[in-house]
Length: 136
Image (tube, rainbow, N blue to C red):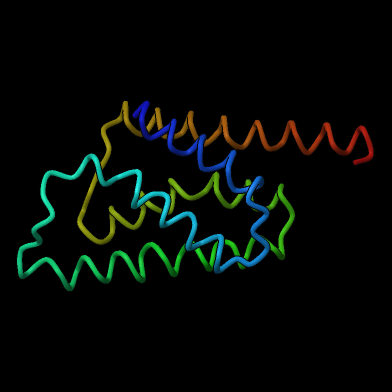
């Protein structure tokens, strides 16, 4: 987890310094950085036959396309709106897992998820109130 947090930090610090203007180039940088950072942690470079198609789908559609679409969408919405959308992401992920594979959380898990969601909303609301009070 700490290595992942470090990777995100390095990536978010480097992107503005590179001054990448195009969303497609930003997507390519993000995916390339993640791929290079992940290489030392792979166990082998051999890919079993039945895994290649799902792996390509995950790389091209579930990763590359979604990052590019996210960057495209973020050009057209305010930071506050984007933050609210991101706050709802864990809820949509849980609902998707629940309805597709029947995943359920325990009562304690549901309480924890609710607290995380509410804290994200409170932070966004606090930032909204602060920006409104300062006139930004």
